[in-house]
Image (tube, rainbow, N blue to C red; front, top):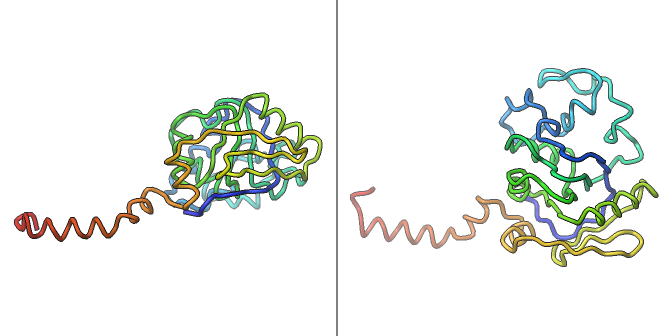
Length: 211
């Protein structure tokens, strides 16, 4: 998993509350169990005027000119800002895979659905929780300048805006450690590889019948 320390990037403003996981990645794409390749289908129903499936090349579909992901002014954004209850709905991990595959390393919102929030940390995407007023300040900064960049400093647990204002955010120390060090659950387990091998060797001696 890619480590997350400090990110300075443009922001994609998705000014909607209650964005559910079916909106993030619709059900027809869940047939694929690969963790990559979902970026072109992110926010699929809002992003395209034509229906899509895994078998249809997104490049052949008409983009919705009114949807923010199709606004050239926000191209290259790596931070997504949204409203309350982001990631509600079903627990599909594909939603985080799609965000990551598109290029988003972080989401900023006042609140998240619990399972989506957990899935973000497992896949290297940082879900930052700010107050509604602080989130509004991010929207205002992006509205004033679509090229504005904000900084998310995970070690310092701060979001810094172009005008110099800074907002602190809380994060579970375990999640912070894993993100800063680029550790998913498998990577975290492998940090104990020597102890695991020593345990297995000892068990072969103490309980040979198990092997």
